[in-house]
Image 1: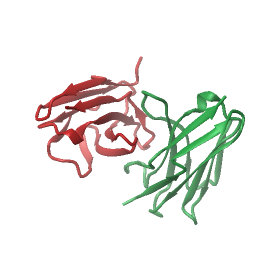
Image 2: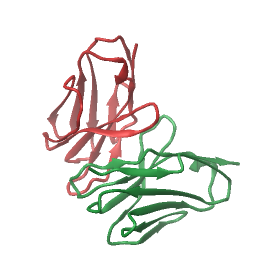
Image 3: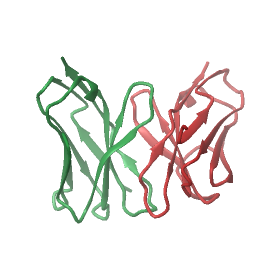
Amino acid sequence: DTAVSQTPKYLVTQMGNDKSIKCEQNLGHDTMYWYKQDSKKFLKIMFSYNNKELIINETVPNRFSPKSPDKAHLNLHINSLELGDSAVYFCASSPPGANVLTFGAGSRLTVL
Amino acid sequence: GENVEQHPSTLSVQEGDSAVIKCTYSDSASNYFPWYKQELGKGPQLIIDIRSNVGEKKDQRIAVTLNKTAKHFSLHITETQPEDSAVYFCAASETSYDKVIFGPGTSLSVIP
């Protein structure tokens, strides 16, 4: 069983489109995250939710909107996609009281 | 905010030799320092971590050292094997609920 699963794994779309990436964890963790990894492999945190509550919101354009329907799910919706949004997006989760991260396999977004 | 630097950006070693990756951090309040390994096409995976009340920690062929005064920490891999080839990230975090800030990564190649 995959601990943190993301869908889709690959996403190719045109500029201006809207797309979503879904994430689910079956570890019973309370906190979930979205990280962005650019072409130089740099990992940057975008958002963090703890028990469905937004606790970290980095300087991310308003076009990015996370949603956590329950503590096992964290989705990322991106409006009006731009070329610079092309990256690998990683979902992660961590247990209560510790920020030991378990990452998903990533979702590679390519904006043409 | 926290800033983590990492050197070298690329490292190539012969199988059986040792590899050392060094990191520095800027926020003296940081007290948790994990190391992640990212294999090609996968998400980062925690391999070892150290907290500020400990100066050194070892797990089989990998060890981490921490110098809080100098704000340095290092990863040591002994008897390297081809399967150690990956990108390694150091990271720092202030508290259990604070965001984990990653270094830029080191691409390690172990030559058989």
